[in-house]
Amino acid sequence: MTDTHKTQVPAHSRAERWEEWSSWPLLILSLGFVALSTVVLADNHIEAGAQSWATFGMLLMWAFFLLDFAIRLKLTEHRWQYVRGNLFEAVTLALPFLRAFLLVLYLWRLPLLKRSRAHQRLRFMLVAASFGLVFVYVASTLVWLAEHQAPGANIRSFGDAIWWGFATIATVGYGDYTPVTVPGRVIAVGLMLGGIIIVGIVTATVMSSLTEQVQRGAGARAAESAGMATEPAGSGSTPVPTANEGDSQRGQANQDGDLQP
Image 1 (cartoon, rainbow, N blue to C red):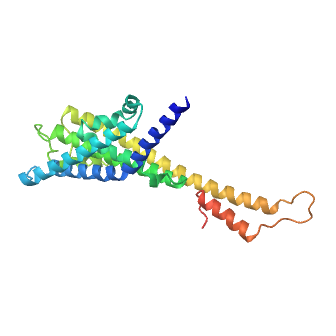
Image 2: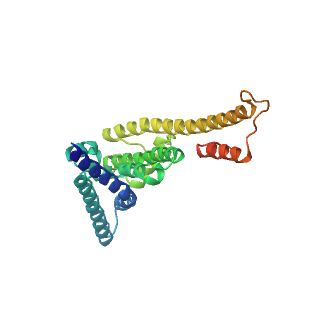
């Protein structure tokens, strides 16, 4: 039983260490992959040589994605369970247009954003905002694929689709570009509903973070005032915190997210 426990823990820690190490390279490569796919989609008149190089770069990045998933699978003892836990990432290996959503996952894995409670709040807000951008990008891509060759459609370029996506999720509704196909309108409804949810989540997160900081600051000041005013039993004088104690209390309060300077 002890030997089994000793063999399970290192395998799990190796997989986690690999995910932390590969988070930055995978984030950069995924950004490059999305950028290259955008160039290919946005410019229908791209030269054959440039298109070949872009395709080669995307295939090279794709090989790295496959290699990364295979290494993590190798480092994990319970492989089938790991695949089920990372099913969406496995699906993106077969459906390239969903690869952009993994940018959110790689941001979430960054060790830099796990150091403190303040960093974790920043991580949550960055992930929520990034998910909104990726959501618009993917929805606009799908609408462009459904609309650009449809009779009577006015969303014929990828740039128009991106413009339409941001105008839709922001509830601006200029009406200059509108989907005319059934799949395009279904995607548009999903984008509208998703925009309401994303804006609500980001707003609630920011307000919760500000409220928590204000409450921590008020609690720290109240505790400091109570410590100065409380007289210990059997003593005829009121204890006054020293300068070092006051600096220590303020430093701890600022570390926990206090708004005081």
